[in-house]
Structure formats: structure tokens, C-alpha cells
Length: 433
Image 1 (cartoon, rainbow, N blue to C red):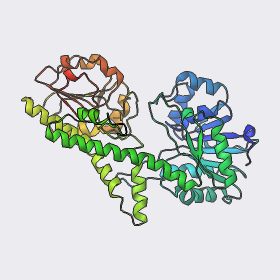
Image 2 (cartoon, one colour):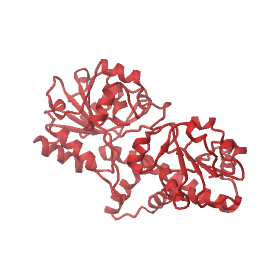
Image 3 (tube, rainbow, N blue to C red):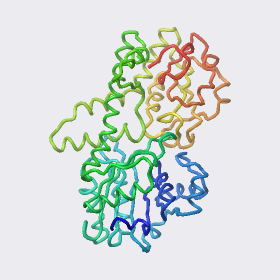
Image 4 (tube, rainbow, N blue to C red):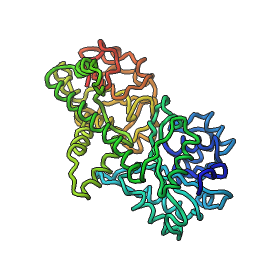
């Protein structure tokens, strides 16, 4: 595939989640795009014109479907030969197993599907977050095996790591600078030109696929370590009786201070991706102590928050056993329906050891899905929580809608309000993380 051939390109985006769907809609503004996902229910919902992840608004989705975007769950559809060159963009999840080892099965399954659909000259670009080497060492052999073709002779690959921030409307995909790379210098140029043709945020062409893979995972490891540092500070200052928010506000007056807040680290990126590099580092004989300790500390914050609430309830003289407790928020971050790897579940399960009267309120999330995946019932309307009074409450997620909650009417003193996010009015809060 050569530079300058972009007007003849047909694209296929494999995986229509938080990453793939916005990317498919963006490319559909200029190219013919087929969006493929094995989840039939997901595809049918999108065809009706609504994205339940809320990453693409209904108007944008319907516009794309009316012009250049075709969505399908039928593998035969993406195997159809088309005029002009084809580019497959793989944007499937890369989760971890229960023991935190990388789970490449979604990526390898997608590679198998793409491999059976390849034609001579096609390019496969991976966006999934992986450790350095996965694209060429794990995915390419699957492509070769299922296509019967030879890498860098019959087909080519590239890597352009996703940088989607779920729920962030200020940084849509088209405004984000994208790292690009390719399996040959010519393909690297082609992939870079392809992405640059739809992005306003520009591109950065990495010298190799492995460098591009490493750059993505470093982004998430860095944030994980920084958050772990302030979470550790929060623990130290809580023991000292000092408000961490006040300390950080004072420290932030220095011009080169990196201002971050303590909190829960969930989601599919920061809470998962570091394990990929941790695993691979040990293969090379390196024990990544800092990353491992950061992961351990951040993974324990849900249980820590719950125990701190119990501590503050005891200090206030509030009976903990069978106390009525309100948890505000269940998604892994504010103003977003994404509940993947949410650490609010850890808060809930830890508090369940003390009380069975726990109410979780989150109007953003799918209550049925939460009950199915976590076994936790969610209240979705303010009317449902306003019927009762509570002995304690935790603000776990800073949804904008929670600004309208009259927390002190719901939790009259001596009841305890613990604000994990520093979101509620200071006078209404008994303790902050």
C-alpha cells in the first residue's frame, strides 16, 4: 500500500466499544468504513442509533450510518473483497485474568478473524494496549496462519495506541495526538498519513512498532505510580489528622509541582495495563518493584476507604453494625457509565461485612448490568434515595448530578459523610480522602 492511495481506502474497525466506535465514526467522515463486533446485541443497539457507552452521541452516530458507516456482526461481511486497498483497525479490549496475568485472547481472536479476511496488500493496525512485542510476536503469526500469506510481503501491520479517555468530552479522539508506526518505513508513512487525514491533534510517528507499544503502556504506568504516591500520602496524613486536600493545595503553589489527587483507580486502562509491562519485565529478568507496589497500593484503596468510614463512624459514636449506608456513585469515574474494574465494588463488599443495609445510587450506570456482573443492586433515581435517612454516606464518584444531593438532609449528624473525591461542600463533609 502506498502513500497517496488514501482516496481508495476501505476501512474495517474490529471492536465497537469505547475505542472502536468513536474511531469508526471519525474515519467515516472521509472513508467507507465497516464496523465489526462479535456482540450482536451491541451492533443491533448501535444500528438503532444509540451508543450506550455515551462516547458517540446519537446525532453523530446516525449521521455516520446514513453516509459511510456500515455496522455488522457477520464475519462473512468483512471477508468480502472490495475495490481499493483495505485497512483493518483492531480495537478490542486487553484485560487481565483473575491473577492479573495479561489475557490476550480477545486480541488473538480478533487477529484470527482478520487473518481470514486479508487480501494481498492489506494493512492491519492494532490499537489495543499491549506490552512491547505483542503485535509482531503474537498477532502476526495468527494473521499469517489464518491468511496463508507472508508478513511484510503479502500484508503489513501497524500500531497506533488508543488514547481514549471515557466520558471526556473535552478531548474527543479527533483532537488527540496519535502515536503511529508501521512494519516497514513505507507502511509507517502510510499509517501516519491515514491517521493524520482525520485528526486535528496531529500524529507522532514512532521509529518502530515496539516503541509505539511501549509508549502507550508507559502513559498508564506513569499515572498509576503518581496516583499511588498521593494515595500513600493520603494514608499518612489521615493517620496524622491532616487534611490531604489542604496539603496538596498548599504544595501546588510551587510552579513545578505535579498536582494530582488521591482516589480510586479502576477502569480498563490505569487499573489494568501496568500488569502487561510488569509481566513482560519479569520475562527479561527485571522485577518492576515500583509498578508492582503502585498496583498493590491502588488496588487496595476501595477496602481502605471502607475501613476509614468505619473508623469515622466509631469516632462519631455511630453504630456500625447494620448501619444504613449510602454510596454515591458506582462507575469507575465521573460522568461516565463505564463500570469496568470499578473499585466502588470493593467499598461495597468491605462494608457488607458490617451491614446489609447499603444503598448504592448511580444514575449513570446500567443497573441490570451491574447486578449481573457484580451482584450489587443499584438505585438509579434520586427519589429512591430521598425516602430514607442514613447513618453514613460515601461520595465515591464525582458525578455532576451529585451536586444537587442535599447530603446533610439524608445523613443528619451525628451521621458521617466521607468524601473520597473532595466534591461536596466542605461544611457538609466530616472527612475527605
